[in-house]
Length: 317
Image (tube, rainbow, N blue to C red; front, side, top):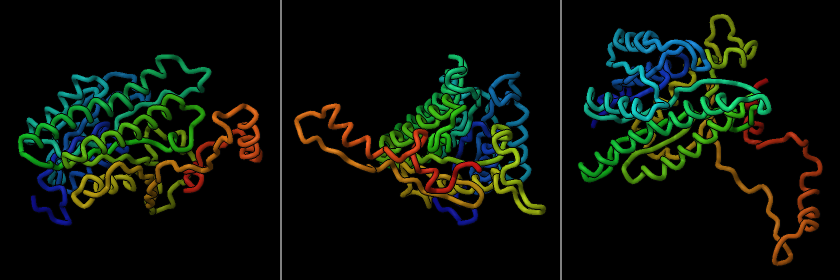
């Protein structure tokens, strides 16, 4: 299918979950600007913890913005963490536009609490929306692409863009549920990339930093925009990367983790071995491990975690 540089996604169909506000809204608008027909999914609950009455208003408003700008959009207000409703979302895209080409998983909630204070429901609900929600939509999109590939006798066009977080990279003491879900999303993405590559589908994951309803307290007083300048934490800094990853130009980008914010994109390597120790015997003993590992960690602070975010200068503050 021919495309232009101004509309590289012309003729493509995209789903964006959690697209009623914040990052999802910016991403849906960007994909539409690049020519895609967009299914705007948002459950619409007003609380960032996923509480409150469902409201179609946010998704409808984004769809209206897309149409007012000359684009094409339809609305789905189901819960992507519900397996059946996720199937209905993918079915809506294929019924309305004939097929699905792009899936952007963005929907999520927050229920922050320290590990020792967190309730079972606070854990389960965040894992359900973030991790299960990503799985549900990816599952049905993957089935669609596999079936199309079999029918058409070769690779098809498919793009999955998932949303993780720096909370996975650097840890977040008050968000064990969120950090775990976001780490799981990275694992899901790399598995998806490997499983679907033969069908022509890529899967990548981003760690965005943006000032939204979800992060308003985290970023209060952090990186405030200068007068007349775009907020460095605006979701508009994130959306172009999603548009690129959804495009034909990103055909060779697969299974990658990218951090994005404020005019910066960082490609994060997979973990590498920092040090290696071999036993001088058949099996390690306690004393041998003590002699090898204790000196290695002697001068490190006890709260040091993976260094990726530190190296990239991405920690908040």
